[in-house]
Amino acid sequence: MGEGEGLTKLYEGVAGPNAAGKRLDVFLGEQVGDGFSRGRVQEWIKIGLASVDGKPWTKPSLRLRGGENVCLLGRAEGNCLTPEQGDLAVLYRDDWLLVLNKPAGLTTHPAPSCPEGTLVHRLLHHFPELAALDSERPGIVHRLDKDTSGLLVVALTERARLALAEDFAERRVDKVYLALVHGRPQDRGDIDLPMGRHPTHKTRMAVLKKGGRPARSAYEMLWSSRDGCFSLLRVRIFTGRTHQIRVHLAAIGHPIIGDSVYGPGPFAGWDKDLPWARLLAKRQMLHAHRLRLAHPADGRELVFVSTPPKDFRRLPLLLDRRVQRVGLTGMPGSGKSTLLRLLAEKNVPTFSADKAVAELYAPGGDGTALLARRFGERFMTEASGVNKRALFQAMLENSALRREVEELVHPLVKHRMELFFQAHQHERLAVAEIPLLVEAGWEQGKEFDMVVGIAAPAYKRKEWLHTERGLSEQAAAALESWQWPEERKLSRCDLIVRNPGDLPGLRAEAGILLADLRQRRARQVRELMERLDRLWRASASAQGREEGTSSRDSFT
Image (cartoon, rainbow, N blue to C red; front, side, top):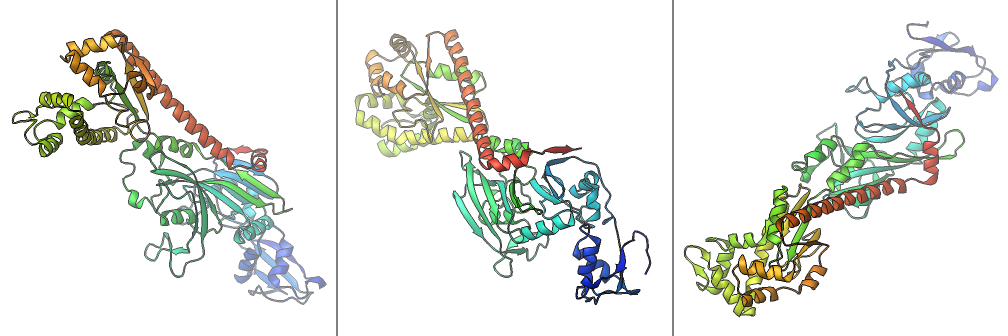
């Protein structure tokens, strides 16, 4: 047995008396030191790179007597990987280990599908001492999927690697992840579902009823979008199965956003109307957020925390974005329709309840059909559907009939309004003019995000009702009596627009209103950003922040 290409003599000497009874692999492991694992020494013995008293020996379990001449050849460089330049965001390092922030899109270690361009190749460039360790995965004691970002610990010596690997295997390392998922799960959950290879798709993992290995995860919901379509979870894993979090969350019906393998299932097409979110969710939104472990040298507790990257932090802001639904109301003659027209001129989507009623009352309209079934031909005309003048007069004369008509027609108007908001759900703002908004109970909450009231002097309102609507003083008074008193009505509004009684003045008020609404939208975004920032910080202990930032380096 001689030294060949890539081989060097790692040890040659006489086994002393203290070696009596020791296995050959144990003895040689002690002699070559921390740079090589016992498993690596065993491999070299098995392929004939060890000799005892000049004869090749391929059994690592050989018991020495003491006094034998022992020799071991090996690859002192430890691996044949080529170091590659690339950035590393190192949070902590000492002589034993380092902890870094792995970006999404970077494979942890080489594989047949990714033989180069991995994190390991960058590590070898910045930390050449890793070349003495494992030939394929030097320093790697756990891994993150390519598109998962966050904390990764790397051993810098073989002794550290063995200690850390044992801690991971024995579940002594605490791992916490953040995940953005579809839907709104329960506030907390414990997922205890065995996992194994998918029975037909061998590159995938799956929950298995039989033959799976134990796998347990627990989650806590930190945030959910206002429409309940998306949520942020903090997930702790108690086992380390491949793709465990992704498989477990998909199994309970809440796959991770952007997971092309295990989702979105029933959420297919979620991004059809959310192009801005689709641009960010190009990978599974999973981040290794917190890591707690014992130092392999002295056992002291180390805690590290990683704030999610920009794409992860921005996505909830976009997923929570929805149209600002504004209801516009006021007394008869206050200028609601004019203000609505001025907003439409500013490209704001608008809805008019009066126009909706006109459409409902047209020939073949739903309102026409309802009133015909209830009142027969009393208020119908063959040419124009509902005779609105006759109906209005009857409602003026009979309050019970008026309330009955409202009960029939208001749900139809509300449905059309809901369809209007849905059609404009990705706009920044949409305004619906509803004269009887507060009287019907359609206030801030389910129907609207805020209500705007418009006020005008009483004499101006009466003038408009007479000149524009052609109503008598008696009819105008009756129309006004159907509504709450102006003071009470406006008290239920979030904002008040004062109509000065002239078009230029109202146009200026419309501009002020739009600016105010824009500021409120911006404030809502800031509040969500601040809330999410508090969530990132709340997951970090004081010790974690101290350990995770005290020795940060950037390797480029």
